[in-house]
Image 1 (cartoon, rainbow, N blue to C red):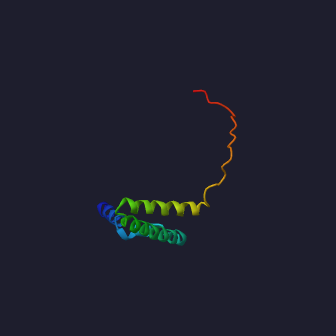
Image 2 (cartoon, rainbow, N blue to C red; image 1 turned 90 degrees about the horizontal axis):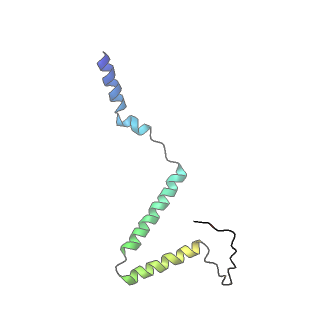
Image 3 (tube, one colour; image 1 turned 60 degrees about the vertical axis):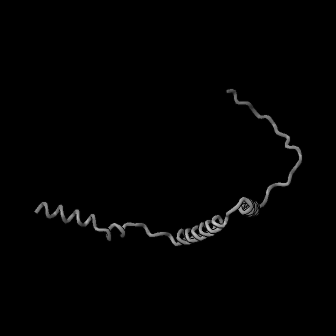
Length: 92
């Protein structure tokens, strides 16, 4: 009787359908964001797969740089003196 109970307990714990029921459901927002990320990764892979020469790589580098700079709002255009101030020293 005791071995039968242990066998039934082990069988119920090893049932894959019970394990799947314990997986957390994905939040719809996370699922949507993951779909967007996967699409962008696929586009990136296609773009990189088309690189076959140094010129192709340079065009890709230029395109990525332009995209990145537009996303961060560009670089500052200040070219005057920096006027640094020394506020302390670290003795090593």
